[in-house]
Image (cartoon, rainbow over all chains, first blue to last red; front, side, top):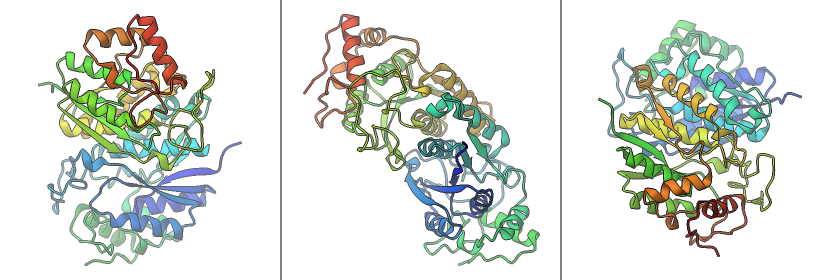
Length: 224
Length: 224
């Protein structure tokens, strides 16, 4: 029998909140997983807790992963400034191997739960050039998961669902609105303050605001 | 120019100490990485520090990864006893997706360092049936690494070196002895005490003791 349980990676941002709503609508009992990886915008962990509760997750765990010890990103290293101008290159907010680490921990929890479904809110359209947001990356992780686990050896086929991967930000927002996601609970800003108020200037804020405009939906973001 | 830097996963046990010596002999500046994942045998983290120092690692980092929050293994969950009898099945000391998580973090650090070489002490011979110790798993991770990272997108080819993968425990010990590894500094026991003294009864202790006997080398393990 297939387990209804699913592990859903939940950052507290707009995309992963939408994914949680999609996984719940598909009938999964959602085990939401957030990572405290030393990110600047730790207020997003509080947002994740609010979102998990509001969307009826079966449980929510925050796991500490000390990626701040390796540095290399504006999101984990205070000495690197968050950029406020768009760039064609992969930006300094890229956290080395972050999605690989996140999916690995999600895989471990899925195996403990006896689940084979993992959901992640990566997006290849508005993805800011992050390599670990592309379909080829997701497919490679699924192959790895079958080889990496006791469950995989026993025949389980892990599925990494990335339902937003081909959607624009406006399409994501329309889908979330249809599913009743309260985007006022989410925080996207890379340098949000302790109350979750956004800067309105970083890449992530710009993409989010443009998404609400394009979707024709009122933006509930609180700016400071 | 190829970087001489390498990330070496170092648990504090016999195998990874040998791998560190192999990587150093190959001319790498070794960045040793240990994980505090809530393991029972935390004394191995102290052993890792001693080993890194004795083998001249360029640096040694211990990163906290909260795998104890997901449980599912005798090594991270106090409610599951460490077995003292051999078994044909994958044992309860298997930590779900552990090597995937370890390699992911190593990959992130390698990218920050501008390194493409990662060393891990997995072994497919005396591997106790852990799925994430097989050559196919290592190969799948290398494929993933190329897709997962900014460096991979830019053309870097990450190599995951698993120099022990086809060796018996006795062969590993002979190689380490040749390279001057002081195995008295290492801790293999799944339930070592605070001073690093071994139980002599768990799977890991049995494999280690048999390895020294087969290698014809005196076993420096301190038993309690």
